[in-house]
Image 1: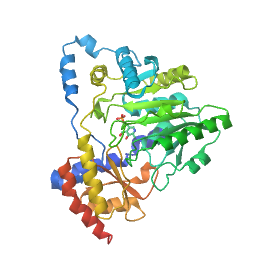
Image 2: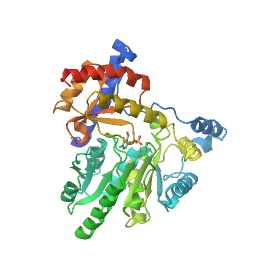
Image 3: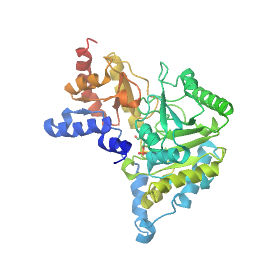
Image 4: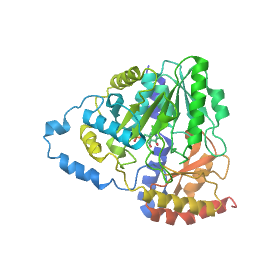
Length: 392
Ligand code: PLP
């Protein structure tokens, strides 16, 4: 007998990766320029120069220094640099001792959930949400409780209040959002904090907010907000995957707010959870690279131009799209109730759009526009043909 969950996760492919694999095969078949692949969130903007400069500089270090194990929570110099960076940007007081360097936001989220959850405890996620939240939650022995959005794809707070129970241990928030690109306004974070404080009093135990922030720097208007300012019991999961265009290098961190209830124990529990999964340390070379690149990002203005091109083009054709204030995803209302059927129809025009069902919400498709702008331009006639199929 093998564990049912592990078998199911291992055997099933994510619908995003399945569509990306289909796209790769299709490009071989008919030529890459004829396939409009909006399937996967792989940054197309190159990493900033500071990354390759840091790499070249670091190669002068001795191999033992460069490739040796680091302490499990990461190099103290990096943790201190992250702490100083958060202080200068947000005025946040996160001591280096509460910063855990990890292999991207995915590992951070999984470790936080394993560190926090007792069997059967509940984790609330606001739909639409990153599909792996379900795997990370169930892998930690918890139960994922989705909360539907309001008409603007922001959290429906009445539904959120109904979803909170004495079993709620954590809530995941993700802004800018994958898959919608929607950015949570300050008022939503304030409301979220108020509701959570009230729920803690009502149930008499801590409820932790996990702020999943791989897109924090990919914001097209205004400055990012610091989520722990709105709720004390917050753990921030950050990643350099998108901000520095390094998704394959697996590097990020968890910052535990010192104001979180039993913050030291929470940090130890997440470190222990990571250890129990055989995690030793985040890649040592990349730890040193990102330390030298803190505060820098890839050229986000290129994504903004693509956002304007795709959002403008599709709304002009009559598609109903959520306005993406950040990240690099456009969430488009399906032209028939079944988003999977709509995605299949789009394939006939060589448009690869991810159906929204795995994001916890039916009726939409996601277009990842982290692609060359000329592909977006070439794709517009295909979108027009798709709209015409539905008499739009
Ligand atoms: N959370 C969200 C919302 C994401 O979109 C992703 C990746 O696309 C992740 C977490 C995981 O990112 P990382 O590469 O940092 O593990």
